[in-house]
Length: 350
Image (cartoon, rainbow, N blue to C red; front, side):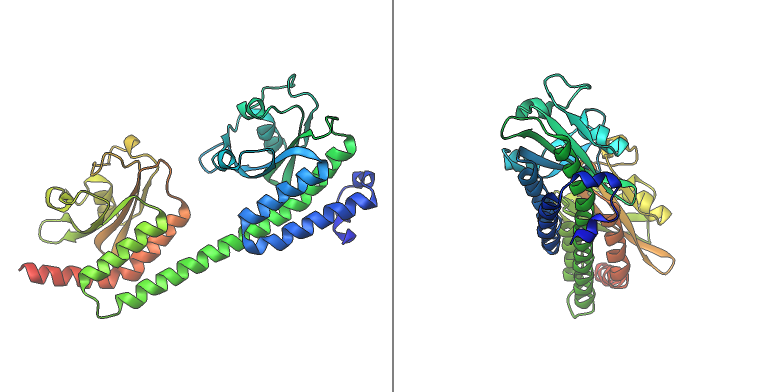
């Protein structure tokens, strides 16, 4: 197991054999946890640091897509419920400095720090802080923070070096766990898309197919509402044929022309639109006062745009590249069946 240390800098000679074995024992536990997913691996990383450094707590921070850093896991004297939603700024504090510099920071007295700390340090009653980067192939992917030894003594140089070494090895664990989660997510997407394809080719009614497609889109993206709209070729208006989470009469009073609103823009351009905050987009036409984010993708058969698949969220920045890719795949897969549903309903109305 000690061969894992061969690629580390020469400075690691200040970690003795017992410490190496202890670190590798903890890493082995964390590696084993990667099959359980990133959350489990992150938790074991913090548990290992708390144990190795005999600290009151340890917190693993990862970059948050919306800015700053989020607490991915924590152990020791922490309120797990509060940690679950903890975010800290990306421009102040030890975490930000470690992440930006890729270098370890040690603050022996948190009451007299060399730079401003985040409010979290005061809330937790931190006395001293050691923070090290999780670096993978010259890239910092996170920061591990330990604070306040349980015996009241300050962290030693050997403690800091142990944290650095563990952070280097833990980066591989975190990366592998993230990869496994990603593979599982993609597998779940494929299974979901296969289910849509299977039902779309069944004898289900057009209305049932549309409902299944929309339910799938709303559930997979964690949306609060959604709709499937068809382009009426007679007047070039978007007509809602299925909706979820919107007012019952939205289909009656809401008619958008191709080019009008976000969905109208999608129908006219044949391009997807992902709006992080609808309040800042002039194209948005309000269907619900609680909507904050929107994702709309075109439904095409050949070169013809026949409709739009749209989902909404009550949260800002709700949608990711992965959500968009999934909805685009869903729209492509279901396009022929949706066109048939539109034709059938048009025949019924004629």
